[in-house]
Amino acid sequence: MLGATMLAGCGAGKTTEGAAPAGQGQAAAAGTLAKIKERGKFVVGVKYDLNLFGLKDPASGNVEGFDIDIAKAIAKKVLGDENKIELKEVTSKTRIPMLKNGEIDAIIATMTITEERKKEVDFSDVYFLAGQSLLVKKDSPINGLADIKKGMKILTAKGSTSAKNIREKAPDAEILEFENYAEAFTALKAGQGDALTTDNALLYGMAKQDPNYRVTSETFTEEPYGIAVAKGDSEFTTSINDLLKEMKQNGEYDKIYEKWIGEKPKN
Image 1 (cartoon, rainbow, N blue to C red):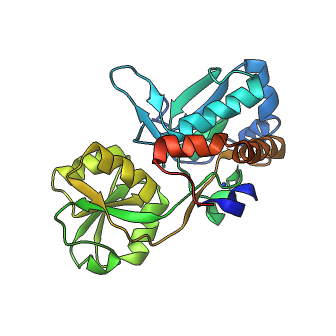
Image 2: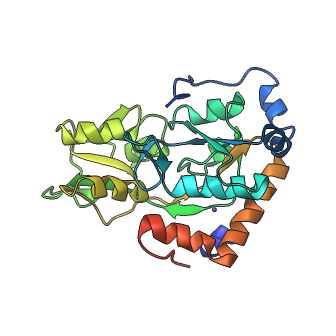
């Protein structure tokens, strides 16, 4: 899936949308690696509500998933210990403001690399390549975009590229946006919509949680995930990219991929 592209990709969730105060972004970019080493801890923004990528176990309080294992690998590279890490919950809406405000060192949260986002943050190379799809009930007549009729309700998350894409791809549908995908999935199960849309990798996690739902086979976008860091922090970006290449070459990346996605990456 990745191939050459790879070689060349609860507590803080109340942050509001908006630009960082003047100068704060530049200060964060002055040297994230040095800041992490001085602190002795890597503070990273992750999702808490996405099975397979970042999901918090309400019983243990642990957050686990593909993105979490990538974050641990960075902590191990920078600090020599994967446990020297602090996870902070982000949503599609809050993650960039939290990075700009210096609340987190990086975003590893199924974040699609886009030209618009590149104006605000810097991205690593692609570390996972997904494609947007639809989650529907097993007996639903919807198998792709062509089956979405006027008046149908499609659910997604606020601030996501999925919301923008579905509006373009299915202009006759009514789009309902929720704070996060967990809320959107709850709404789908409550009958508030006909389908939920986001990247297929995330939808597979939802379908795994509830076998009454399925992911349609059609994908209608390419969603390259990148690790976001403060704008201008080339040193930290380079360090992350070097690690991703190393993980790909030594097989560590493949192990993490197979552990969470259930198959080897298609190279």
